[in-house]
Length: 290
Image 1 (spheres, rainbow, N blue to C red):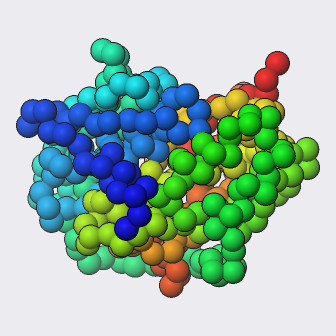
Image 2 (cartoon, rainbow, N blue to C red; image 1 turned 90 degrees about the vertical axis):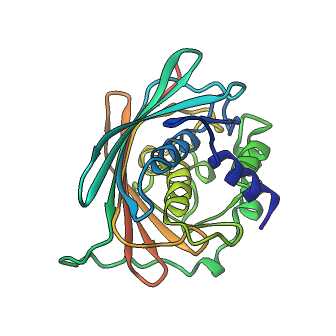
């Protein structure tokens, strides 16, 4: 296991302050605020710490309320909304400087049998045929208006091997393309057999590229290119089948619409052997600078 993954796992190992109150460290990502995927993953970890071990997360719904301060800890308070025979519901509020910055509702379920069907996995190149992000990203450095963007992106994604199946938005700014993107990802190391941990890590990664299809539709390269400003507004995930975040997962993403300074991204995450593991939807602010 690499040092970067160790650091990420430390971020998810929250300090228990009281029975249902936790404190987490934070760090900046590619912009001077806390990475949204980190807050979502920590909130899910806080919720999971209050749930019986035989119940795994099956859905989460969250709102990003304020930009997080990377220089201050985040306090997570979990409310035990419901403990049923099959399902457990938790609500988590993340607070910094006395104000809520994030709100999450999550539901957990005991494993059980039921009707089973799924869509077909879309075609995608094998991940081994694609260059790792740490090799591919520096090729686009000349597109970035922010001279430190490449280094910060590499640092933010150091714990994750993320490989684009198509060129990312910042590769071809000014050229509108189909609003669809695919990336393969896995964390850079072997993990314990803990479904909550794997769900938290998938949540962390899910906020990295989900709005890329919005940018592709309009030929925008993103914040590092300087042609849009944006932030996540809300985030929803449904965990359908078991998966491992330390094995290859295909993140198939598209955007059906953007309007009013907002863009919608929706996606499915597949295991390499074709099982639909997770569905994801997010809306974010996507504005053109004036």
